Length: 390
Image (cartoon, rainbow, N blue to C red; front, side):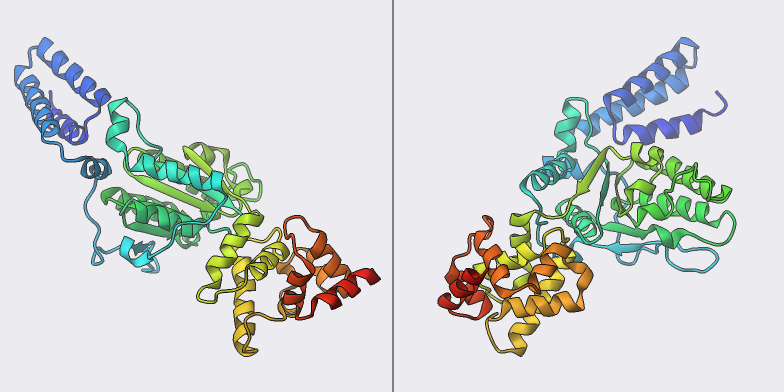
C-alpha cells in the first residue's frame, strides 16, 4: 500500500485516546490487510493495538483520566496566540484558572442544578466512556445582556481546571476578502492543539442567518467555515458559545451545540441573593435587600449590581446604614430611568401613602408598618396615617 505510512500515523493518533469504535475500525483494517497478503502492514497495526492495550492497563486515577480525555498540549502564559495577518492584532486572550478567582454563579435552583450536572459530565469522561457515551462537549449559553453568561463560562472552566481561549467573534472579522474565514481557521487550529476551553463570545457577530438577503456571499462563506470548524472541534475539546441575540443564529449553528442553556432574568429570591452578594462588605438590613430585589423586577444581575452600587455610595456619603433607601432608589431611577421596570419606577414618584400601601400589601415583601418606617426614615405612626389617607 503506497500511502500506508500516512494511514499508520492516523491509526496511531486515533489509538492514543481509543474508543471501542476506533479500535474496531483499526482491527478491521488490520484483518483486511492480512487477507490481502500484506503481513508487514498488518503486523504494524497489531503492534499499535497491543501498545494501546498496554496504555489502558496503566491508566491513571479517575480525575487524571478524565482530564486526559481532553487531548492536546499544555497552554502556558508564554504560548503565542494567533494574530490577524493584516493587522497583527491577537485573535484570542488566554485566561488561566487561577486568574479568575470567581464565586459560584447565582441562579435559580433548577438552572444551578443543570449547570452542576454539566460540569460533572465534563469531569466524568472515563465513567461515561465505560457505558459507551461521551459528555456533551459543546454548550451555547444565551439570554439577555447582563445575566452572567460570560462569568458562568469562566467559572465552569475554573471548575474543570482548564485555561480558556477567549475570543470575541467580532474581533475575527476583517475587511479583507477571505481573511475572516482564515482567522477562524487559525483560531480553531490553535484551540485544537491545546487542552483548553474555547470560549466564543458575541457569537452572533458571525453566526448570522445564511439566507439573510442583506448579507453578502463573504459572510455566507464565513458561516460555512465556522460550521466546519465546529464539527472538527466537537471531537477534540470543549467549546462554549455565548450570545445575547440567539434569534440571529443560523439554525445549523444551533445544531452544532449539544447543550443549549438559556439564562433568564433572575426571579425574586435570586435577586435577593444577588443583592446580598453585591452588597459586600456592607451588612445591609434584610428589608433593604428585599426592597431592592422587589424594585428590580425584570432586571438582570448587572442592573441589580448597578442599583447596589448606588446604595453603597449613598451609605458612605450620608454616613448612614442605608436610612432613606427610598430616596436613594428615587435618585437612581432619575439617573438610570431605563434600568427599572416602568410600573415599579412610577411607584417611587407616586404619593407616599400609595407607595407604602403597595409595599405593605405585597405578599413577597410581607412588610409591617415598622419595616416600612425603617426604610422610609419615618416612624410607624406616620406610615399608618399615610396609608389611611389612601
